[in-house]
Length: 241
Image (tube, rainbow, N blue to C red):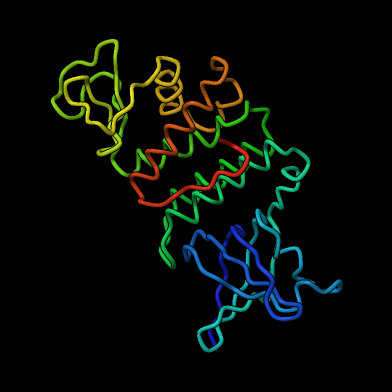
């Protein structure tokens, strides 16, 4: 029997057997993995706090015959405030959905984990306009993959981008009118402004931003479509689009 500790966030939770819970954890040290909380649905369970999505804590895990069992949880933050604001809740759920889609089992990524926690904290505790944080999170993911959204030069031919700029969903980059494919979309100046600004600031600065009306929703739609092209997976952003 091996045991280990890890800092992790509950990404998904589902009932298991009569009183148990299975939780999908995304951790700093061990990446993504499933674990079981014994009797977590019982009123007297000492670990029941660790069964809820968004719970961020230090989890003590025992691995018995290939099965991870949670034997202790020290909660760092429950992000309970997300439950009292539907807009914040939906946006935070979108962050969880993205993490589920882009992470591999038992593959750690310290930078992604830190951005993940920062995003949840920003949504929960800061007075940010709806969708700014999830737009920023998606842009960060593309940047880490090498998609820089250069608003000055065409990614295909290198020509200076003039008034019309297109996102080529085939390659995930901005291109000029000559290099656009049938699977390209012209980006409005308001969307380009959102992408440019969010690409160059940290999460702590997001509460100071105020973009033109609806530009953040247009940006999310475009970034979501680009995400689905890059990861070949449908992104279910309940209540956001």
